[in-house]
Image 1 (cartoon, rainbow, N blue to C red):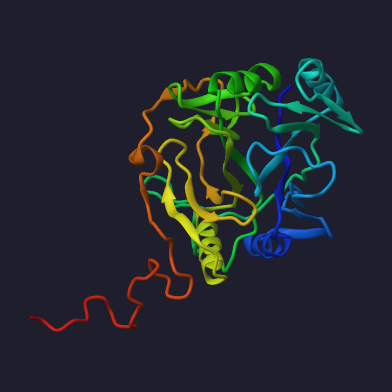
Image 2 (cartoon, rainbow, N blue to C red):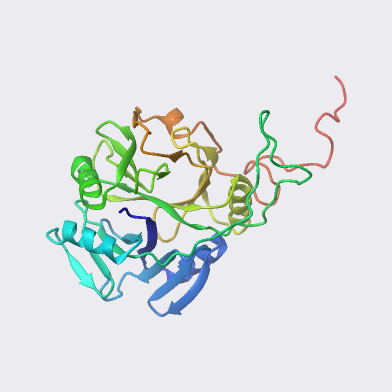
Length: 321
């Protein structure tokens, strides 16, 4: 028995109109719209809810809005749900409403569990030719004009008590530590076998509670680039990217979100099993990113933002000195 992944997240924000446009540009489908709530879906049915900060019944945030108010984790069966109920029934903020149960984690976040509503998908993805393996034959790699995220792949929070918060997810929900920043951070996956992390908890030098980012999985590296350039053309600000994380191996691109903190396109993370032994790292720029572009790529010129636009000439077509 194990948690399958993120089924739904809820943001609290005041500017719903701006959030609406942002997540449409991001590539989500708007499935429901009301005066105080927007509901989006990814390709596999993972839901992103943006609720107005004044909406009644919205769980308290761990920081002022805009931020993430609630994370709903999906499970496979009623038996799983009953198991987790027995583990969290005595936790602060325990709730049981319909087919959803939940509590408040030690960092103050509303955590919920439900039978997973996500759909299984088979998607065409780019194959990569290496020196040793050549799976792509007579077929060019795709180029994307924009991204269509598959799901919410992971969430990252600043915490005030790393030990207590990580213990909650391990002991109550069965999460497994993938890698660590000793006494500073824990990369955690839902089950022994799966992607590198579904949750990252980070305790800064001056501990505080808050959202760091929400990450959306896309099908391949080319969709990271295509999605990022589309967001750039739409006028949204890059925080960092594209780039590559050496710890998880993922290719990323981060944007500033009107719903709070950052959102990330990512792909090609490490796949782990129970044989994986967690590593320990010291936080630093080269640990966070093997390489990265500050400010992103301009979607029109296809060059680093604010770089000289292409002239159409061959790069070596220059007069000799």
